[in-house]
Amino acid sequence: MEITSKKIQSKIIELSQKISDFYLENNDFKYLSIVVPLSGGVPFAVDLVKSLSDEIQNKLLMCYAYDMDEEWYFSDSNPEIGEPILIIEDIYDTGKTLADIIPWLEEKFTPREIKTVVLLEKEIEKINNITIDWTGFIVEDTWVFGYGMDDENGMRRGLPYITD
Image 1 (cartoon, rainbow, N blue to C red):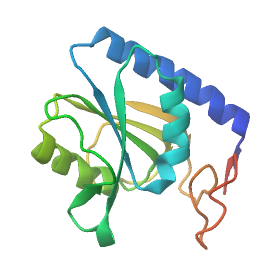
Image 2: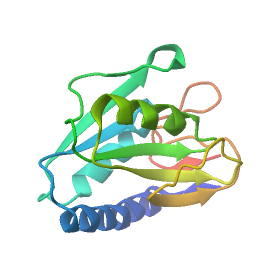
Image 3: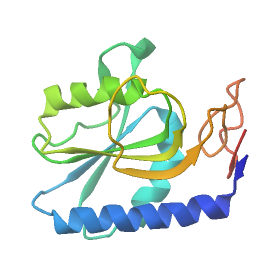
């Protein structure tokens, strides 16, 4: 399995248009807080945010959890209270990350709404019923790496394509 850089960038443009259309139609907010849990989603998030409409005021926020505990932390500033949040994830497999972070965001920041976009969704049983609002590609249940995601040895995140 391989998803080329060209296919990734084409899908990002498609997703950014859909997301931009949604937020421009529902624009009763000051800032869209864009949350990127964990480092694997950074390349996808950066490319996606660059492709969003310039009319959407946004704050790009990196967050992480120490030892994958229940408490998340932001590296710079926090989401705006009561404003919408868009979570950008590299891959949706079991759903643990989203199952952990969504309730935490709801409790801490009372967002108007939380939407999710993932580059990859694995065909695997999920541990929750989280609805993904925008999905790039559906992939089989296999270890994938590249474009921010690491291989079994924690390497090859920097590849411009995704492979197994």
